[in-house]
Image (cartoon, rainbow, N blue to C red; front, side, top):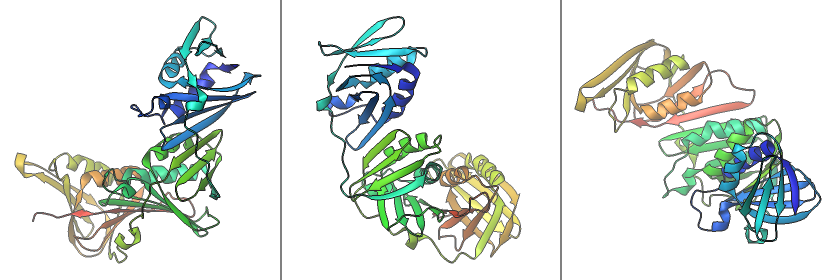
Length: 372
């Protein structure tokens, strides 16, 4: 078994796949990349049992076969090569030899048969989504997903597909983000919960892709195919909470404000907030928004005044500044709308501009009780 491949081309593909591999694996074979050679095509796979990702590379070869190569060692050596062709030769003594312009390097390999087989989805449903849409949907929602092991359903992003459009939801019970598109549709109704890790990997690659992503899914697994990659992952088992029930429908108090200005003010004032509650107070009256924070233990306090466009009753409401900063930082619009009903009900944050046709983003943040 022998093949020739460009060093930088191989490194670029392996760095993407390397993000699947865990630092500590229960099975030693998972510390390897699986190389499957079929003439001029090399299929490289990485897995952590929950998520498996493979990339197909075009290479120069006439042989066939499969071997598992140590991932860390291979990545380390590839990073040091300038761009050049490398020849990989599988030797009889269980080593794979890499020949470069300046030297030879031998790595021990394991038989390819030992590597866990990728899951084949039986009778999957299928939806095709533009890479840019999926990338935006993931980056707009994933930050709001929880990381509580006791509530695994909330640690992922909820995908809801229907002929009306696509909806992506993430929540950790303190904040919630719902991202929906009506310009991309699915043929039938389906929903599933995607874990955080495969989504983070996808987010990184999709940002630079202009292709369509084919999503195939059944009750237990989902597969994403695009460019030369295929990512298969196990879905989170369980029922997603009824998120529509927590989004308040009647919000008579509406505040419109410049996002960057609001973000900068919250960021400054939050420095003076209590280090455990991160509480900031918004006091709105007429066209004036007063943002304040106080840490009584250290006698630190800050207050800023902004002008805003406000319709509604005068009110005071408290928020965790970290949640507010995450949300404001995740939006790209110039102006944002904050809708509220009462100081003990969730606030709804939406961008007032900068959205594509058929795109909506709704962010919900739970208030914190103010000490009067």
